[in-house]
Amino acid sequence: MTPTFDRMTFCIHTFGCQMNKHDSERIAGMLEGLGATMVDAVEDADIVVFMTCCVREAADTRLYGQVASLKNVPLRAGSPLPKRIVAVGGCIGQRDGEKLTEQLPHLDVVFGTHNLGSLPGLLAQAVADGAHHVEVLESSSDFPTELPTAREHSWAAWLPITVGCDNFCSYCIVPYVRGREKSRALEDIEREARGYVEAGVREITLLGQNVNSYGRDLYGEPRFVDVLDAVDATGIERLRFATSHPKDLTDEVIARFGSLRSLMPALHLPAQSGSDRILAAMNRRYTREHYLGLIAKLRRACPDIALSTDLIVGFPGETEEDFLQTLSLVREVGYGQVFTFIYSKREGTPAAKMADDTPREVIQERFDRLVEAVQEGAWQANQAELGRVVPVLVEGTSKRDAAMLTGKSPKNQTVHAPLPAGLDAAGLVGTVVDVRVDEARTWYLAGTVEGAPRP
Ligand code: SAH
Ligand code: SF4
Ligand code: F3S
Picture 1 (tube, rainbow, N blue to C red):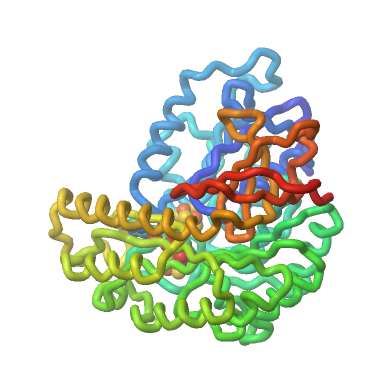
Picture 2: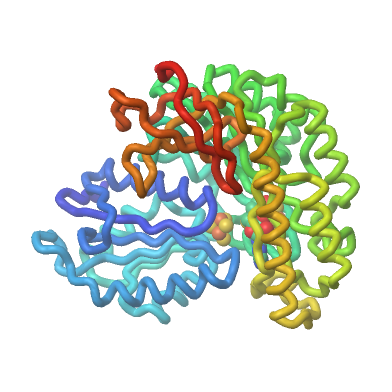
């Protein structure tokens, strides 16, 4: 029997990567389809769903506190339920399963990364009998995203093309909680993309832990470059993808930057470290030289491409010399944006068994030096935009100032511009306006709108 959630409200707290954010959109789509209403605040929610992340320890410990503190939040007046239902899904749900209900006795439902579709049934059982319901699967037979979606924004969509990861970087928990890599059929990807274009979506971001290895489980055909071409052919205005593993980025894909109409001139290419010794210990399977070779090819294909990356500081055994290699990589590449992480030991990964004796203060001091270099580089990269006119996809207005538009440039830079007189901010959301850049800061550009918005 199909469960119904008429008159019930729910909210979803999402942590971690875009995979989780997208899974949350699927959950919202399912629950809304079954009659429930989404709300923002836990105070107003009859059902609270946590979509969790365990890629680093900080996210892990935070969940326990947040679920525990819900106990003190009273159920809203008018709720059809006798008590609030609390569910935990995502990567901690997958990793810890039953153990979570032992540590958090008022938890009602636990589900994993392979069975989003089971959530409504589990919630309905918990509503009916007030007991714990835990379901975590080893892996799934279907591609888990063939479910309805309630998108966060009308103008942008995330489109998963693979799930899981086969790379087993030695520090990383993702392959253990997301399972083996599975590619989605190209026809399904094309169908979903066409549907988005027809619905007025202007930007699609293709998602996967390593989009470049798309198709490997489909006997090598089609390949990622075929996905890019097929999605471009749907007429989408802006196309992006994440994430790319440097060992699998092909010359064909590189050549699409600057030649494929919709592909935006921005690439996130996680380096993790600039030291060959550490890259080998991380099981990344490329060298610094190979990585820099890719950067050179990308710049030849698309001279103005914006590059971003992820870097880990304090991997077990990292020496000052190794760290200096990472620092010099940042200076050599000139990234527009860098996500910097302090290494976090994850039980069950190979790196958790490696000797790790660098003092905490030394790692923190390296991290601070890295952040400084990153900020310098980002500021430098943004100076090139001064005086240019950039087409900005408007996302809304600034949190602090309702008369300040904010949006994204093709290079994925945040751009602010005062709302032109006589225009309505809400009406501009999801449209493209031209902005002449007259201020270039470390993390954003600012300028003035020129001409009329493009419908
Ligand atoms: N599949 C993507 C993203 C994986 S998780 C990729 O390969 O790039 C996002 C980032 O978290 C990683 O790129 C890495 O920089 C960081 N990360 C993963 N595990 C980590 C750990 N144990 N400690 C610190 N950072 C980690
Ligand atoms: Fe983790 Fe490496 Fe897979 Fe990325 S490619 S998810 S860092 S194992
Ligand atoms: Fe976190 Fe899971 Fe993504 S561990 S980074 S939410 S795949």
